[in-house]
Image 1: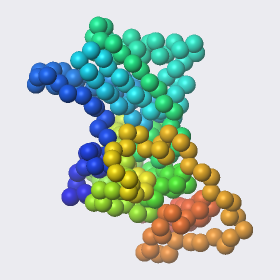
Image 2 (image 1 turned 90 degrees about the horizontal axis):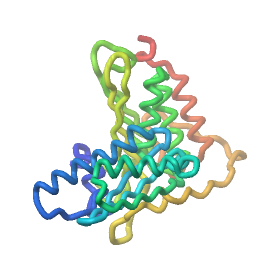
Image 3 (image 1 turned 90 degrees about the vertical axis):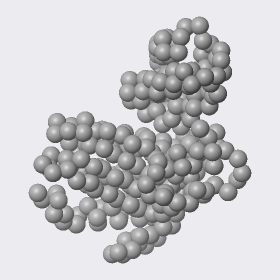
Length: 273
């Protein structure tokens, strides 16, 4: 079951808090607020891509709306002399109504490479820039593993490299227990707009296990950067064995780069076509 459903939705109420938190008085109000929440999120994800927005959480009462934005580059949202914040506030009030009280909070992400949405958006941008698909996917794996993730899974589907027949390509590194509910797995879906059609990009990131009780409003490793690992350049580099996957928490940054370079140098029939 964990292989089929949305990994975020499967964990809401268990170890993840809901991204929209409110109670409506009627079915009509529920539909109205759902549409407004979707418009608010699209405002940040589409119009402010340079800010690298990871998540947008919304809390409501009958008279107030609280919007919490988590971004890797909050300066693009703030702007000089808070001009962008004033513009964003005006745009949100046009969506929810000018009579509603709005509270906008912008938080900076400490470890953006552990956010599935940011990684998926970066990969989609690389595909739109005509970067070789295999190279772009391997670079995403390297960045996530070096940031301290326990595992990553990337799935790209569509007319890859302009092929006439659509297909999909997947890479998995490290541990990815999709059916383990206590695993902190972040999932995101992005789309790359190319001249030969739309390419879907899905990313799963395993950020470790959660053993504490209660819901995490905001994961601590998202707001605070990971501690840097000690330099181990004097150690002998280890290599990936054929048919064997090494645990990501046992790999250093140099190991990941060495194995990834070897993987990139291997001939690939798909790249020759």
